[in-house]
Amino acid sequence: MIFFTGFIGTVYFYRIALNGIVTVFAILGTEAFLFWSPRAQQFNTKFNLYTRRNPAAEQTSVQPSDGSTGDLTNFNNTLITKLYVHGYGVAPANSLSSDSMKNEWLNAGDYNVFIVDWSEGNHTKANIPTVAQAITKLITELQSKSGLDLDKVHIVGHSLGAHIAGLTGKAFNGRIGRISGLDPAGPGFNGKPTSDKLSPSDAQFVDAIHTDAVPLIGLGINENSGHIDFYPNGGNLHQPGCFINRVTEVVDNGRIKEGLFTAVACNHFRSVDLFVASINPNNPKGVATQCSNFVSYLAGGCNVDAMDNNVAHAILGEQALLSKPYEKSTIGHKYYLTTTLSYPFFRG
Image 1 (cartoon, one colour):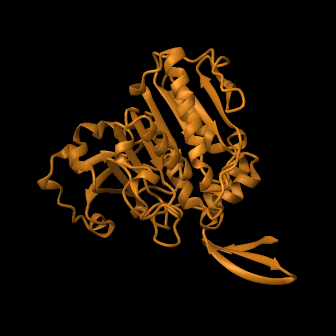
Image 2 (cartoon, rainbow, N blue to C red; image 1 turned 180 degrees about the horizontal axis):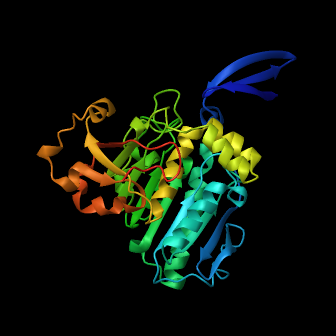
């Protein structure tokens, strides 16, 4: 039997009992441990649809149990369709992150918003192909029955959800309009072929935010994933305001379990916070600068004078799509910015 005993930073300690002998060992990051499960499982993926006609009461399709989109009567094929795919250990039914994402989108525009719930299987990366297949099936059904236009599809995925979005994009040969990866998961994906993870070819435009991209101990991938890649505060373990602010925020909303979990992985979840903040058009913009590294960025040593202004700078989050016309010049580079301690995070 395995028992969780505690953590220090991002090092998690477990006790494993074999034949009555208890051994303590450390795992760098929760997902690094949980990713070891080699077998995919059978489970349902739920698609909860929200629109301005039903902003609080979802319409639900379950895959593969019923495989029907008949209950999604509020789906409107003339609107942009947003899908949010959570990562490890989060149940959207009780998730402040999912609620915030959905609410900000519906406040900002008239969208079809799907919250993808794969919480029955989100404890291992072995299950991500199953979720990608379920999303692919849903989109295909909406194409054939409701006239969904792939150009109007935007999938946002956090952690493992980013790679689920990537696999879904691959199933459509990169024809989906946009994918946004929020700190795409690193353990089990760093150094792997692009066929296994989020990559620029998965959609017409792919943007990524990296907030825990630290080799060995970070939960986020330590390599670029999109046409444009953002590294707030260097993309490392020191995201301003982490832990205390997140615990306070979630506990105040009565979600103690989520508060403790996301506080431990705060840097990893900060990518979600930043994307949510970027949706509100009244908030300051997260303007980032192309630079060789974060130290040079802080020292003002980025060679921006030699670049087109639209390549030298880009806006993190919802408005990253403005950089699409310049993707040949942004791909392969890193964009840096600093943030404040708390919402709305950006300095403008």
